[in-house]
Image 1: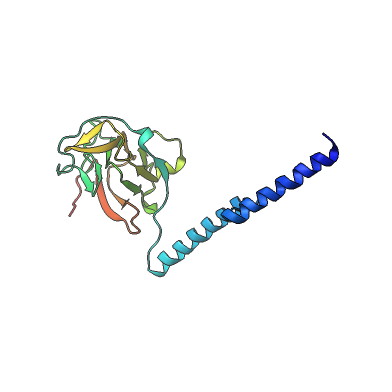
Image 2: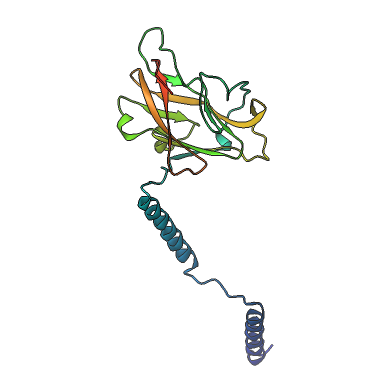
Length: 212
């Protein structure tokens, strides 16, 4: 094939592509597409933050993601109705109303299984003033250091088998609890399903706490 024939094929190919683009309204993505999308996302996030602030609210902390893949599996009959559990909508912290102190009297940690109904999300946040004396959250077997203070639970989707049930409901179950070097009534902030204001709950670490 001669050089002139090759050039003719290239030119006609460009013309055909141009016609297709005009007919179907198609355009090739530019090199700046990803950067523009990132900038748009950042602008949207900043706008949302300013909107919340104007209403006297603040966005929920993001924290460490603990999802379906980090779950354990078990059955929890009566979990949502047990008065010893802390229940916030679809979230249950099993036995969190009161954890007995160890026999030696030296409190170290309390195991509270976390359950979340299928298809829901819940953020559990340790308020900044309470992050003392070794107090930290410990759920979901994650290496993210943010998990010490804020855990973002994401339950398995409704169509996926989680292997856990509570009162006939599909739930996702995570092992773990709260570590602390002192017995105390510990307040936690809980944001359910994207809420902008938390619900405040209290867990009893070696002491019985007054709750509403």
